[in-house]
Image 1 (cartoon, rainbow, N blue to C red):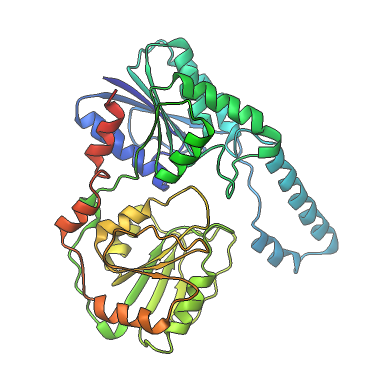
Image 2: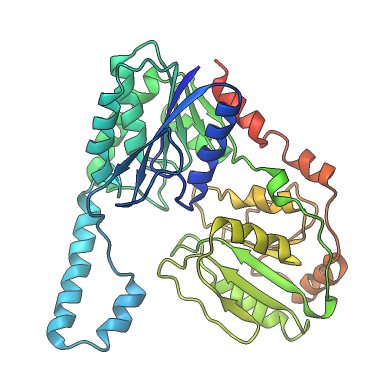
Length: 398
């Protein structure tokens, strides 16, 4: 079978979106399929495999975070401060007019790349969003090859995410709906990573029968490693992942851990990943160490005695690291959002922390479970349906 995957994020990019499709592409190639990829990339970034068409975008519009702007403003002259404030206004204007999302500048180039491949008769074309440009481009290929199976996969939703709108919904509501609906009508399958996103889209497009759930995949072989606690008197708590303002912030987690210090001495909590403008309050036993490469991130997760997870506020996206945490089989302290919904309902080694949680109960959980780890067979049972082969084969099914 000849397969074309269109996805902006692809290695050496470090995002979870990137690794999902690198794993799937490798799986398909090992099964004897011919796989081509159209991906984005930074200027000068070399392809790491031969079958990738890398579309290097023109200058990507970037702007300072509110935090960095605030720090600079205190030091700059009045004239420079005016410039900074103007940039902040322009940033808001820019965000209110781009379409379909922040990677709009990739769209004309990926459409041209698809046009060049229109005579290469693929049996299956997959467009993967968190950038809707990939969906539009996959749909564009379908215009030239109507017999090709089209799959649209949404790692992140496009038109239904009120918490993290990808464009100005007030301005683009109709065009969002029209472009999605036209693509859905000709797609063989439209997949979402969780039930919540599936339900939102099913409510919006009740006549579309192609919707299904394709969960975050996880390679248990990569994550599961027998863990031995070296020092119970100095446990290492750890978190690897991004924070986002209004979506996933560390404030509540830090406050609870600071309170925990008074009843449980000796632990350290280390956080890795981008802050994205969110403030992080460090202290003696709590620190943030920034972004790490994928390989190092896995090694860090394997080294922690207890894992920290911070739930999203009410938004349809679900982090892929939930399945990765389960694959490790270790105790998890899960800090709930205001929704009080846990992503670890079926996981036996979890303690959900809410605003009403008794710190002493959290301490008891830590003391009783620090040395525990699920057997690999238990982990594989919990992740049934999320294995690479299962997810990969689901895309090939009619």
